[in-house]
Every structure is written in structure tokens, then in C-alpha cells.
Length: 184
Ligand code: AMP
Image (cartoon, rainbow, N blue to C red; front, side, top):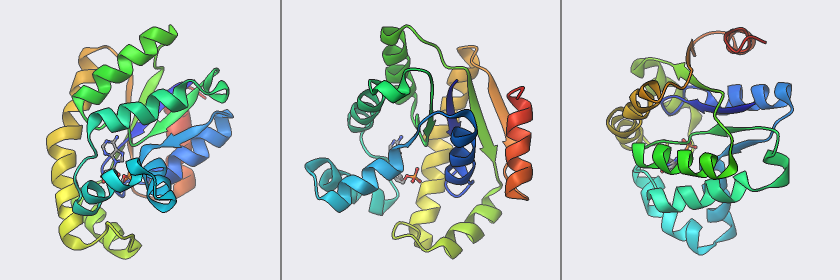
């Protein structure tokens, strides 16, 4: 299966995406994780990404599309993959579609994890990652509303199956909701 998992920061994309990918036996790629690794490695991409990430802003689309193009050509992605935290802009969604067209494959579904903003603020403030200061959290939520929410509308217009799943509650129950919605 070829899937993406989206949702506001702190919705549990990493947790649910990891469980889902393991269950389906497909690789999971998180653009956020790849960027954090690039920062730790001190690559030029990591250094460029740093100032955007720490400000709660999105890293430029061409950087992100470069990352995704690289993971899609991996042999392990041949039979399916799960992308976590991508696409976050309509430009990324358009670029992604071109990449999939070139590969001659289609997306099976989008899992949209829904969590309200008050819950998100509490979760992220408790998580304490370096881009989790209150100001940055607020900015990331604004960016999500302004730039990432339209991505779902774009996919709805493109007739891609969007599965909206409530992201509050027991981790295993949320996972089983996702599997049910996927018909598994
Ligand atoms: P995440 O771990 O998915 O919350 O991502 C952490 C940060 O990495 C985000 O706040 C962005 O600065 C950056 N990032 C991750 N994925 C993307 C993406 N698809 N587009 C732009 N920036 C991204």
C-alpha cells in the first residue's frame, strides 16, 4: 500500500504511522525525522533546514521534494510506503503527484489524524522537543492551518481517499480504527 499520514503537529502521526507501517510491512519515512537526522549529521541540507524548523516554519518545498524523490526510488519502497508529515503544501502535493506518475503508481489513501488545538498545545508542551516552545507550537499550528489544511482539499478534488480518524484516546484503539477504515 502507498499511504500518507497527515495531521497537526502532535497528533500522533509518528506513533500511529510507525505501528501502521510495521503492520503492513512497508517502510515509513518521516520528512521531519530525515531533517532532524540531517541536522545531527551537519549536512548542508540540515543546516539550511535548521532555521525554518526552529522557527516553526516549513522547510522550502524543493528541499522536501528532493528528500521524498530520494526515498521513493529505494528498492524497499517498490511495494509500498508510508509517508509521515508530507505533503504539507499544495506545491508538495503537486510535486509528489508528478513523482508518482513517473513511477506509474498511485496513492491508496491518506490517513488524516484529527486532534483539536487545545489538546495539541498540552501534548506538545509536555513533549519538550527543541522546536516545542510555546511560541513555536503556536506558529506550527498556524502554518498547519494555513498551508497544510488546503492539501486535504486538494486531495479531495483529486479523488484520493481521505480517511479521517480521531487521534484522541488509546493508541491501540486509534490504530485499530485506522486499520478498519483501510479495510484491514
Ligand atoms: P515534524 O516532525 O513532522 O513535526 O516536522 C518538524 C519540522 O520539520 C516542521 O515543523 C518543519 O519545519 C519541518 N518539516 C517536516 N516535514 C516537512 C514538510 N513536508 N514540509 C516542510 N517542512 C517540513
